[in-house]
Length: 151
Image (cartoon, rainbow, N blue to C red; front, side):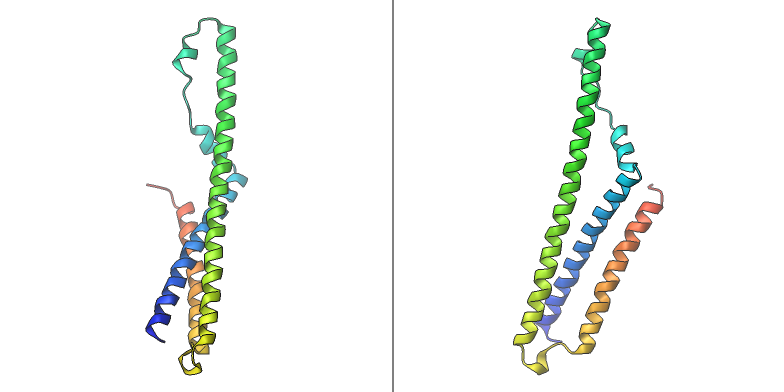
């Protein structure tokens, strides 16, 4: 394997790792939504009632404004969750495109090399296996991260 091939393949491995982390982030957030964990987390975030509302002595007006505040905060939390999900998915698609582009670039570069300088089947098998191991490694990291209690 030539030095420049090694660098390109290492770059591919790094991109694959970033892609897999982004993929696991999206899976985690989607599973958390399904399990209502994110909703519980968002509900635990309290944005206190402004003092201008707290100081109102008319109980009906105080209640109306408090309800509006609570409703606004819930809408805000829901919107922030949607933005968070969209950002995670955008990052995933970005890494997926980079990964696909780099993989194609490597294939094209291999075709341009003289046959004796191309990666042989054995090297390609090792690279493919390592890419699978990267996927498995990231899956295990996220599995352990989500099973083990935080310190």
